Length: 168
Image 1 (cartoon, helix red, strand yellow):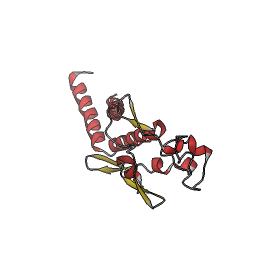
Image 2 (tube, rainbow, N blue to C red; image 1 turned 180 degrees about the horizontal axis):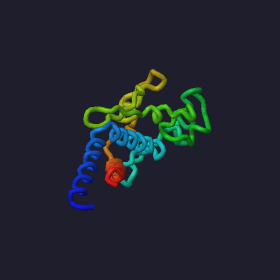
Image 3 (tube, rainbow, N blue to C red; image 1 turned 90 degrees about the vertical axis):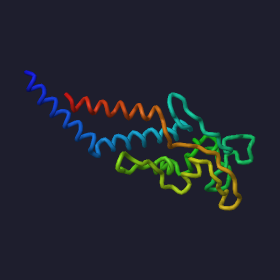
Image 4 (cartoon, rainbow, N blue to C red; image 1 turned 120 degrees about the horizontal axis):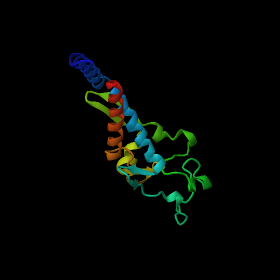
């Protein structure tokens, strides 16, 4: 390959990279990686920013000294399963509504990740809530979406792998 062929080949590959970067494909990488990272918060019971997990405050239903120990929000009675259930797991079993409701939409310069559940913001930010729609209390913040150095590195690595494929 002479220099002219190399120049032409490089220009073609760079055009492919530029087209890919401007396409929605890169936004899908951003969205999928973000959703997967944020879903890990539910498994970890805390938000992973870098290599450390910022653990969520525990729930009273797992504290044997609490009047809420084993409390089932569905039946209002004691449930042994609730004493060991993960934080923000709900009682709907496999559905894990809050976790599975995470979604992303493509916007002009990237993606926006959100959770449309009414109570998502209450848990994310630690806002006021009501017990059985009556008594007001302060929900502790249990963030599951946010800026993460680890997520940023994972996205950068995935994008770099895709660019390398295009340059082969």
